[in-house]
Image (cartoon, rainbow, N blue to C red; front, side, top):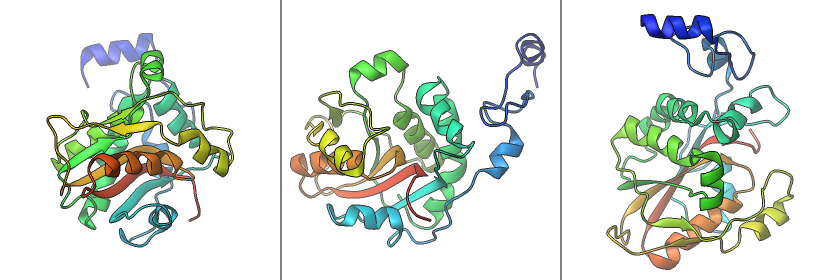
Length: 232
């Protein structure tokens, strides 16, 4: 721990986003106690699990995985709020870098050519200063060496927030908001690992897959989310 980090912590103490405990110089945003208490997803299969089954009705997805259970009534809800809204995107990157290798060892992303984050609209990116899914995808890319691809999938319009919408409203709210463009990166015949922060109904990820397949009909898709809000 550097002198300057120690001095900064003395002058401006940092606190855990979950329990509020003061962080030491080795901890960032989340204390080690809360990090150990985060509830990991217990599925073991990448080819048959609740996240994958939630997408199969709409798309052919090869494999999927998620790292942590998400519950809005849990204190750990604050982890995802901090990552998404409170200027802590590096927390998402670190959590993905720490947790994704478990899924990679099971085969998720093993043959992927690119990691693609679900994009944010330019208005929300301007307001927040970052796209949380991109930071999570960076953690995955760092952990695996799979190249990050940011020049294909774009959000062409800003939809309303999904937070308080029902499943059917989420589907309607996200329909047609993404588009995939041909450019320097050709995804035909390639395998991509699509990354987002949390999956609830799958509406956002589903429209992302639709956009990719409309432009690149032979692209193969795998999915990874840091959080899973569905059944255990």
